[in-house]
Length: 578
Image 1: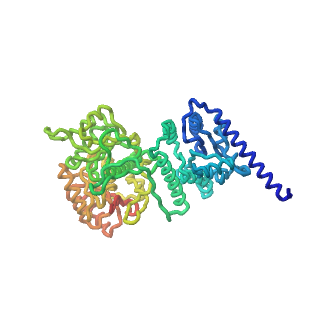
Image 2 (image 1 turned 30 degrees about the horizontal axis):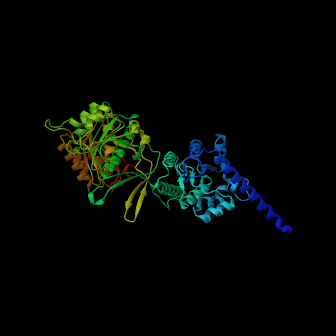
Image 3 (image 1 turned 60 degrees about the vertical axis):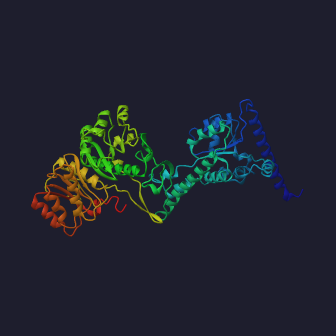
């Protein structure tokens, strides 16, 4: 044999020895399977390569008990062997063996051939000749790149290091090869059940493949956003629920969960009873969350603690709100804010609903001949069993929705995620509204003209939180720890003031000695003059109008306390144009 062919000869000999060892290992594994207990399965070989090792050893043992041969890569091999799980190293069927640091075993052509080969005579023969197993099941997960991006110390180098290109390559080959793909540890139990059930042809494999492709899309979407700055933006969600659309012709409304760890995310709320939430219900839930978290943040900042809070909304805007130390009193005041508007409304509290609370919600200020107040939903940290029974409706339209996180609201409860608004052909993105009104004398951006009591400051915290999370233009009034009127969605500020006063008096409230908050500055003197003429004694507004000094002079002349912050800081055009 020519000398120059000797290296080739030894390379081929090495391959033959390696292939033989793989077949010997497979045969040994087969001998360890009890033929009486093993299921007649299509799935014979699995590849495990996971970032999060929690539960993987137990999963591997379950697979082995079902007659599945296990291959693994890298430190997954070490972890499984340390757990006394019989496993073969995927590097053993790599031609020439792995590169010393084993960094590209999972990128090798041999492994991907095992994932892409079809169950055809030609493909099976070729794999057999090369000593490569046909892998039927792939369990691969990704490092939490998306969650680690915002953590302190995350750098460009971290992004490169965390790029799971090998895991992604395996997943993509497995999906193309129509393998059983597991990317979510929560799906392992489902896979075991499916295997035990005899691998029924029910679309399960297709669902898992689609989920794997979705997870890769989300992973690379996050990477593109990180590397590209604001050039790219991705929204990715998983269907969680379906309900009634906003209007009949629009069809159903589907809720997609973005998979965050936010305890106040919609997916963290559990519906205790009632028919499924539709589009209007979910948008009301979102507006309630914005309002109650801003109220809690304002009280936290200004007083260092958060009282009991109850907010009621109708068509997205608050029609009732109250705070205090007694749950029953707070609920009564919230309802009395606008007894007409709250009918069919949504209510949120930061305290548990008891039977006594339920009775208030159903019967307080209701005519004697009426059966019960109609409410579309009640959202709270929890419900006592007797409250659930009392609030149950035959039609199921009174939805009870719980989330314990509502019981611990404060400054840190504000939503930090960006806001996106769909427009034709695209979407707008901006930071969330996280401004909190600070009415303390130590705030250098606050100008106080006149005197303000502790009670007036507290009422302004409620009025501001409702005003700043209602559709602009808005003027909101509060008095004696409750909302008395909310003038929302007006094209001029004076009309918003008039609407607030109309709603207050129409609901039986006296605006004298009340507090009012606006979501921006008064362009003319007519707005504050309308409020003052009706008895309002404390006003919060932003500064920035050419008529600011006229408004300041008016309040001084009439003995009304005016509090102002720059419009660039304190404007509350929440939901403007949506």
